[in-house]
Image (tube, rainbow, N blue to C red; front, side, top):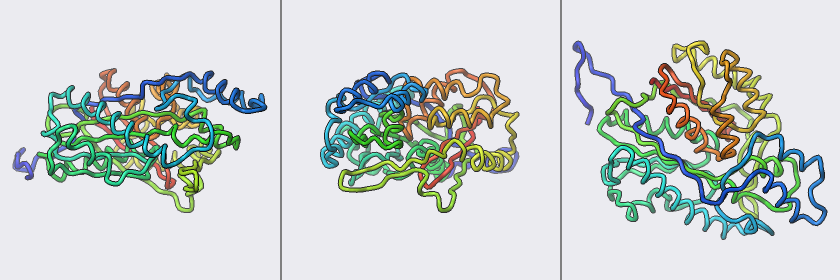
Length: 356
């Protein structure tokens, strides 16, 4: 029911607010050098030097994966990997959801809607619906699964969750993201995109609680932009082995030539300029993508420090990653508008503004 609070005779605007963010990764940690050496040792002829060198240039130092490295050897069985996605993914989501709810003193039964973003496995019924009984959510909680957003899902999920709060300001919304990117690894594939994937992608999850109450960061203007005839930039090919990565090497150039003007237009519609912004929370697609984004945000003396740090510590976890960056930036307790950006399949740019 719409709150009827009045201010100077007008309906008081109700803004969705982030009450807390929690993040989590699986318990198995691996360094970039361990990944390189593992792949090299498992191949009859090892890794060619020029390919091995790629592991040292991606900006990733360590990351978490959902199973021991040896389990990724051999031809992937999509059924087995998807079963692991369902079991381990649900456990990771239950852990991170519990952490977020505990931070704000809420019980699962007090949540009215769950938005769950994930694109690295298939779940029908949705993982969110399968979490209801184990965690104690109400049977009438609204479950909204979002599939296919990929790396853009963290920002677009916030937009959807915020819209649910705007539609009913009494609604408490839990936004969940979870990706187990390592399960798409194809051992023995030495194509350029497969090697890049093995140097970058990792596993992780996040949980965000949104309400119209409190004094947390308020969601302002959000938007997405999808370019036509751009499917070859990023996505999945589905074949007999399961999910196969589509990834263009032209992403950094695309950021400079296509995404930058879209962000300019977005900021103008939000009544902002780049000069109004402190460090934004950007999804770290990879080191070269961060370089291109830093060239755009050239007014920042320290560049995209939080984005680079998250990439170094956790790799690219797809949709949750921007929430890891956002969590670090909000911990600085700065004020003013905060921009969020991400790029994902479509090819789609996602943007949003938080008001602190």
